[in-house]
Amino acid sequence: MQKLFSQIETIHPISPAAAKALSLIGKEVSFSKGRNIQEIGHTCKTLYFVKKGVVRIYYFKEAIDITESFEFENAFVARAESLFTGKPSRKAIQAIEDTTLIAIDADKMFGQFDTHPDLERLFRKIIETSYVHTVNRIESLQFNTAEERYKALLKAAPDVLKRIPLKYVASYLGITQVSLSRIRGIK
Amino acid sequence: MQKLFSQIETIHPISPAAAKALSLIGKEVSFSKGRNIQEIGHTCKTLYFVKKGVVRIYYFKEAIDITESFEFENAFVARAESLFTGKPSRKAIQAIEDTTLIAIDADKMFGQFDTHPDLERLFRKIIETSYVHTVNRIESLQFNTAEERYKALLKAAPDVLKRIPLKYVASYLGITQVSLSRIRGIK
DNA sequence: GTGATTATTTATCATATGATAAATCTTTTC
DNA sequence: GAAAAGATTTATCATATGATAAATAATCAC
Image 1 (spheres, rainbow over the protein chains, first blue to last red):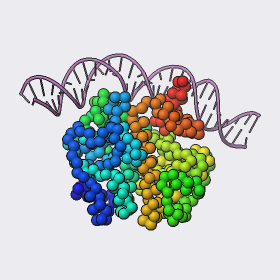
Image 2: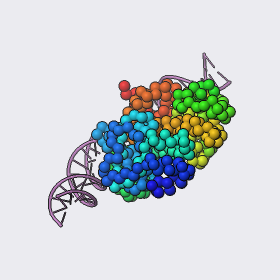
Image 3: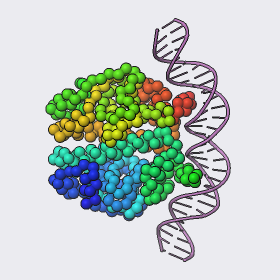
Image 4: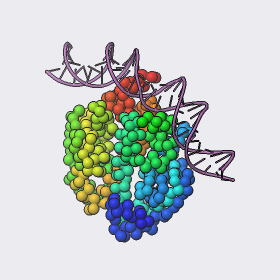
């Protein structure tokens, strides 16, 4: 879990006691490429940290597979709309490469917040960062053309285009795979 | 500030001491219709609570006015991408009706978190709720047609269409005003 | 209340993206 | 390493939405 704690250090350093408590909650889990880490219909009770690999959150809209987001090494992943509401999620989390994560039981972690306020603060900062990302993403989807979104992604996260199949990138950008291919063709 | 504390009660009740601390930080402010509450280029250091009225967050993309979001009575408003990063915001907050808000100085409030962890928890829950909204909004923008988005808004928040000029609603939905008018025309 | 301003709708034409199908190219499996 | 499965590209046609302009309707200011 060294990698998790190094990452935490960059977000909000926590006391040794809080780190100890967290380390007792986190469990390392691995999933091979293509496997679902959490299934559709399951209520999200876990915060994941990506140690190695890449995952995506996806769902189906009228039988069409839509990728909501990708997360790479050192990122945290959860289906917020389920974790924070207690409702079953219509979304799944899937390993895009062979992936190793630290699974943190959310209820157990929340249970430590009274004892370790620094853990709560860390968690808050993680959520704040995710929130800022979604706000920026809305801006991109709201009024940029598909081509602008593709180029912005290419610039902001070239890794996505190297490690993620284009069919997943397309729906992430809010377009069909054929459109993405066409956009890429224009040089 | 009664209204603020009633709303807090529904999110996460706080101790009288925390409420007292918060009440010393909050200041009631009013803006007449059309006035900017915070300007573009300003770094957001304030969390607002809407006591009466409606506000929107907006920005310009190539001289076109784009509404990012609306907030009505009992909602909290802040420009997250600025408040949580410390960078100047490209967005403004504007009163759409004559509006009264409670302005909460963010740094002062953050400064109370060590003393009042319940205040931090309340704030975290506010952010979590906002985050869930943005995640759902992304889903809507990512693959729903303009017509689907309009109908969903009509169903989820009919108030928006009653109280907000359509030109603002259009950009909020990610379409032009002319398109929105066309969609509304189809019955 | 009247004129001026602003918001909304309607019309026409242009274009980006979708849908479908088929042709390549790549990866997986045995 | 050959066959099968899956991913990507290319092509064609259809359509939703954009851009622009002009007509109407609503609101505001005095």
